[in-house]
Length: 329
Image (cartoon, rainbow, N blue to C red; front, side):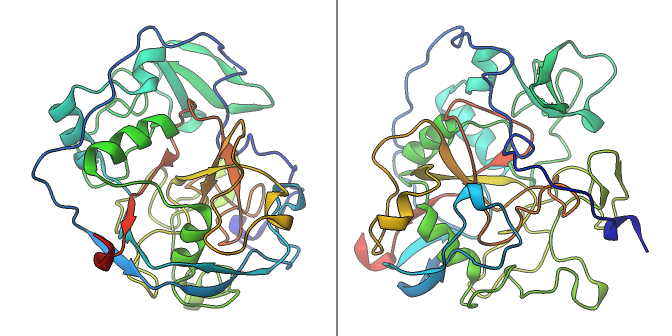
């Protein structure tokens, strides 16, 4: 038996996935910045047309976290739209920052959460996330210094940008003339035309022993074997795309959706182009990250959900953009 086969009890906590900024600091950002305007004369590129239609959303398989509201399975209808083939990269985000002078919330707060195994020895630590001590609040950690001062993005230009809040993602979308996908759109796209499968490629995690996504290998959080070739983020196109041509819909980094999170709104809510509840305290995250594993958090499944407050940032949260279908603009 390999370490990746070992199972341990899984707590029913969302903090393991992406901790909120609140447990360590409740202060406001040191300064505010103007929201960037839409870039002039630019066209959206790298987006895939996702066909509209009916699909079965959610799961009843018992593999997940009932408190997250993964079930029941229900028929949902979404209109056609476009979704980026991959998450926004470091290079793309750098272009945005250079063009607008935008300061992310991690930069304005002065710190962000970094996974303990990636924290350098010469950084200033503010504290740890409540209940999940492997999340370290590191001074100076941000999208351009993912592990804090001394770290670099020079070799990660094609990796997903991280340490971006929901608010940061919205600012980027506004500049690009795009938006975030709704949660229903995200799951429709992630399934790639498959019906009620656990992953974008089927039900077997490693068919014929081949890794299909970037998740934790070993027993979380103590030992990562790196069997899939990555200890942190991977390039946004590191694995084969799903049936719609979309990359890394499972693992690598969590992706922000537009919806407010609710564990039960969908029980009585609309089933045609659902937008989520009108108000809330946390925004939806989908897809899992390089820290997910069945020994602790198996939220890299297609039906899995998580959430975080709109200003929170961590080293495993990114996003991808969406837009109307080609025929609608």
